[in-house]
Length: 149
Image (cartoon, rainbow, N blue to C red; front, side, top):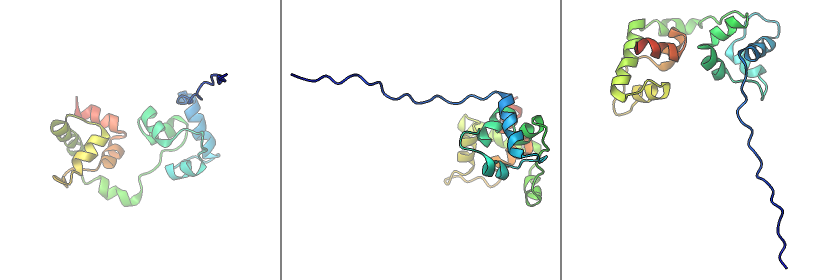
């Protein structure tokens, strides 16, 4: 006589948590703890395991500073040591770099741009890092929108 095991369904993996814009902004206000500013480092220190990530804010609102502004918080000033570094390139040069990447790779994703820019076989010291472009243009999507229009 054989015993048949009862069918036990496999545990279901929870789907991604979807936050409304208002929920995201409320988390920022909560984590600011009454302060008027919330830098990314402070956000990461105070963020709970179930709280949204900083990159989610950037994707949803275009930039970290835009999310802070919508939450009624002060935008984060550019660090003193980065001011010279990010003014090395004009806005036209930032956009031209994205266009060069598009022509060379057929893509304008941030990952494709950085891979193209840092290609060991053909390093490009004459194009800015993606972080510079994102900071100066407010977001990567805004920069690529301008480059492709």
